[in-house]
Length: 261
Ligand SMILES: [Cu+2]
View 1 (tube, rainbow, N blue to C red):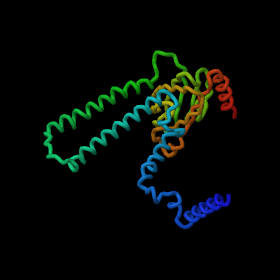
View 2 (cartoon, protein in one colour):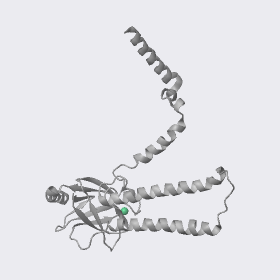
View 3 (tube, rainbow, N blue to C red):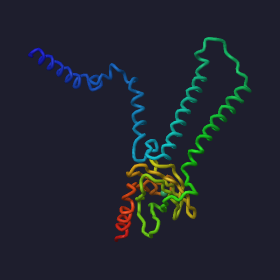
View 4 (tube, rainbow, N blue to C red):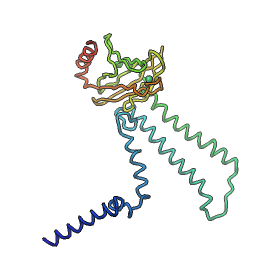
C-alpha cells in the first residue's frame, strides 16, 4: 500500500512541478504534440460552434430552412472541391516530373472559362430554384395567414378576425403551414427567422407573403435582415409556435394581455 501511495505522491509532485515550473503548455502536453497539430481543430471549433444558435440558418428547425441549409452545404462543399482542383492545377507544374504539356488556349477558354462555369451554375440554378419556390406561399391553398408589419424599429403582428395585435412576438400554431403577409410602414426591412425559413423584404405599399412551417412547438428567433437605420441591429422578434389544440386559447390570452394598458 505504501508503494502505491508513494507512486501517487510522486505523480502529483510531477504534475505540480510541471504546472508551476514547466508551465501550462508542457503540462497539457502541447510541447510534445506541437501547435501545428492543434491548428485545424482550433480553426474548426469556432466555425462549427457557429452552426448552432437561435439565429443560425445552419441549425434548421423546419423544412424550408432545411432546404436552404442543404443548398448552403452543397455550395460550400462544391466550392471547396473546385478550389482544391484549381489549387492543384496551379501547383501541378511545380511537382510534375514529366515534360510540360501544352494545353491549347482555346481549350482553356471553351472548357475552363465557359463550359465549366456554365455547367456548374446551370446545375445550381436547376436545383436551387425549386428549393426557393417551395418557400413561397401556395396561392391555391387556404392557409392560416397572419400579418407582419415592420416599422423603425419594431415588428407588429396581426391575426385573422381581430383588430388586436402583438408587438415583437408572433404566435403561430405548430405542425401546420402559416402564411405571413409582410409589409412595412416606413422603409424597407427584411423578415427573417433563420431556423424556419428564408428571408423576404418588407416593402412599404407592398405585401410579400412567406410561408413558414414549425413542425414542433417552440420559440424561434427572428431579426430584421435589411439595414433600416440606426437601430437596425436591435430589431429582433420571436416566433412562438404553440401546440395546435392550445393555439386559439393562448392567442386570445396574449392579445388580451397586449390590449391591457
Ligand atoms: Cu428593419
